[in-house]
Amino acid sequence: MSVIISFIIGFLLLFGAFLSLVTAFGLLRLPDVYTRNHAASKAATLGVMSILLGTFLYFYVEHGHFNSKLILAIVFIFITAPVAGHLISRAAYNSGVKLWDKSVQDDLKHKKEYEEKARL
Image 1 (cartoon, rainbow, N blue to C red):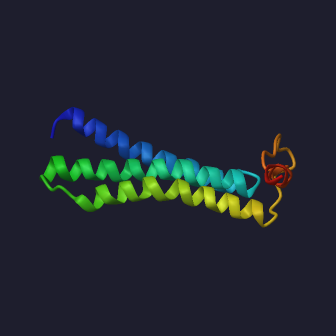
Image 2: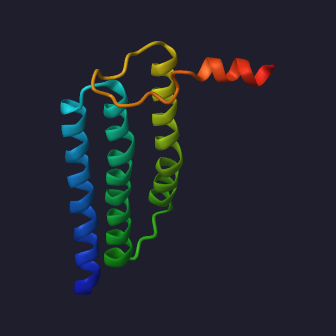
Image 3: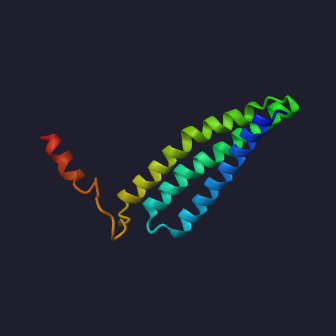
């Protein structure tokens, strides 16, 4: 295996592990459900995708094994994880979960008023 490919694979695996660690700290340290969800949906998605891509490259380059399941997993996570994070945040907001006290702006605060004006 060439040195450049080994470096790329190692970088992808370490980067994915680092992002997973950042996600864990974010889930423990961030103050409300919305910021925790942001950490989980963004950093974890990129971390898992990096690890899967590094794994795919390793087996393809080292053993000549093309694993289509890894490619499908990358695509599936890329599509579903951000959408799931968005829907979880939206469900939390619609069910009345409060924002953090130090939040600067609530973009959906006057949503019902805008919808009422739009109907008229």
